Amino acid sequence: MSDVKTGGRGGARRAPGRMPWPALLLAFPAGLLGVALAWVLILPGPLPGEAVVRVVADGVGATALGLAALPKVTPRLTTPWRLLAVLAGIWAVAEFAVLIFEAAEVVGVPVRELGAEEFATYLVEVSGGQIGIAILVGVVTVACGAALAFRRPGSASADLVLVFAAVALALRPITGHMSQQAFGSVLAAVHALAAGAWLGLLIALALVVRTRGEWAVALPRYSAVALPLVAIVAVTGLLNGLIRVGGIAPFVSTGYGRILLAKTVVLLGLLALGWWWRRSWVPKAADHRMDADESLRRAVAEVIVMALAFGLAATLAVTA
Image 1 (tube, helix red, strand yellow):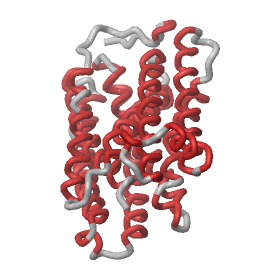
Image 2: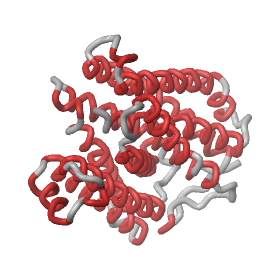
Image 3: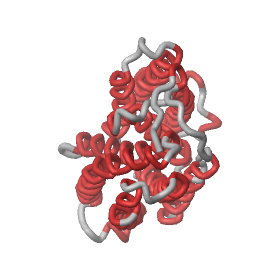
C-alpha cells in the first residue's frame, strides 16, 4: 500500500480511514478521572478547581506540540495546520481560564467573585500573571502561525510554530512549586516538555495516520523517540518528587505525596505497557502485519492511560 503525502492548504491527503475523534475524546473523561482520583487522595481537603481547567490546557497544549512536531518524527507526515490552529485557539481559552483561577487563589476569593480590577492587578503586578500573559502570547502565536500556514503553506515556519508551542508548554512549570528549589525550574520544565511530547506525538499520530503503510513508517520512529522521553519523564519526576516531599514518609502521610505516589504507579503501568508494545505492536506494524484500525485502537488505549496521569499531574501542580 503506498502512502500519499502532501495536500496543499489542508495538509496531507490520505486514503479514507475511520475518524478517531470519538475514541480520542475518551481522553477527556480519563483526565477528569485523574483529577477526581487526586481529589480523593487529598481528602478532606477541597478539590482545586484549577486542576480541571489545567488538565484541559495541558492536554490540548501537548496535542498542539505533537502536531507541530510530526514532520520531525518522519518527513512523510505533514502537520494538519487547520486542526492545529483550532486546537491552539482552545488551548488559549483554557490557559485564560487557568489565569482566572490563579488570580482568584492569589486574591483569596472564589472565582465567581473575582473582580476585573483585581484580575488586571494580578496580570500586571504578580509574576504568575505576567507568566500567564507570556503563555497566552505564545499560544496565540501558535494559532496565528498555524492559520497562516494553512492559508499560505509557503509563508510560515513550522520550526517557529514548534518553538512557540514548546515555550508556552514549559513556561508555567518554571514558576511552579519546584522553582523554590535548586535547579527545580529546569527539572520542572524538562519534565513538562518530555511528558507533553510523549503524549502529544502519540495523539498526533492517532489523528493523522490513516493507513497501514503510514503506521509502518511512523510508529517505529515514534517508539524510538518515546523511549528517551519516558526516561526523562521518569528521572525528572522522581527527582522532583523526592526534592518536594523531602523523604519517604510524606508519600503516604500528605495529600501531595499520595498523588505523587499514584502518578508514579500509573507511570510504571505506562512503562510496562510501552515495553509490551515494543515487543508486539511495533514489530507487527513495521512489518505491515497489523491494520490501521488495530494500531489506532492501541494508540487510543495508551493515550487514555496517559490522560489519567495528566489528570493526576494537573492536580499535583496546584496542590500545596
